[in-house]
Length: 158
Image (cartoon, rainbow, N blue to C red; front, side, top):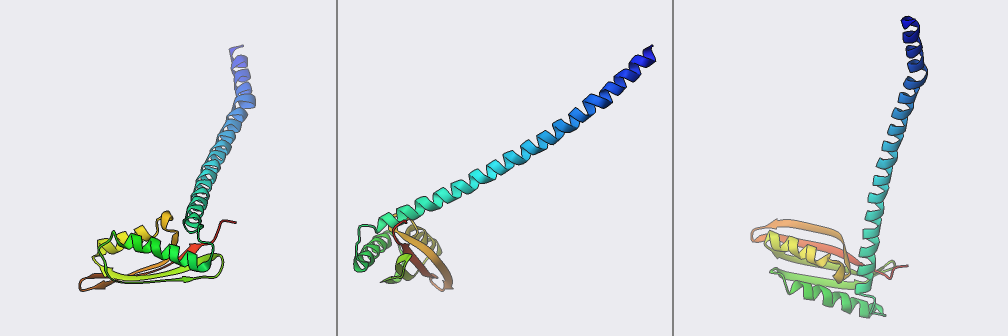
């Protein structure tokens, strides 16, 4: 009788518990994958929202200028104001109108201590200036580094 009960218990365990454990493990794996996918999607959405916000702020920085000449003046003024707070020398600045989707193209070259050159490139790239950096090149010099920077300003958000 005890052997029959033991055999019944083993049969019940094999027929019910083992498949349920497998099903629970599969459900847990599916939940983990869904959770990871959701986390990845949220991270991607956050990156896209940040990019759109930066684009909107950059576009608003020069939105007041209704003509290409006005945009060039607004961007030049913004970059010159940024330059006033740095300690670089030999600055050459060029701001010209550009084709859509850009409003202007900016080229800046300067020289100075490494930290100041890197700080300047960061200041120029702030959303308030409207400039989006395309290329930054630092070259060693005897008195520090030479900074060569190219950027664009974006047109209005579509």
